[in-house]
Length: 190
Image 1 (cartoon, one colour):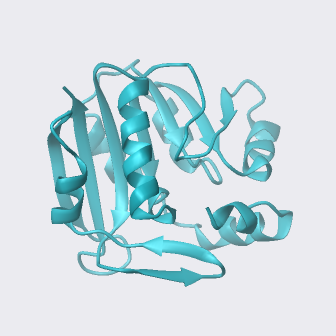
Image 2: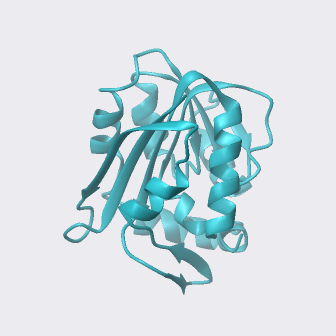
């Protein structure tokens, strides 16, 4: 995964934090709350600066994860009691289970094959009827920006990715930076 190299330096982590200023998953989490009870356990893949993890923690028992030790160290410095894991979003190498696995514009760094592997692994880590809640950049194809992969997705592609092991609860297009540039997917494990 190319973002491993990008986010593993203090300089690039700080660059991302500045770039992400003014953006958070408040609306995504509001939609998730319609499907997931308060106090449920949530694993966030790719916490970055930790804005969404803080928002999730207002309602849920949260565990944050990232592939970048820099992001985890920065978050831990301000939140010493935080439950954090160093995890790759493809293999998600933990034996813990969760009621929900959440990410906000993280899984677009994965190839289609890696995303498929990740979704299968997430299914294994979820409790009965557990949820996934992920946002993606909408579109087709992939491009590289600062050495990072941006793999775009369509609603049709995401529907095909979620096989018979899932029930789609939400698959909607929304605007983050431009009209219909993003897709929110919430699905329940069958």
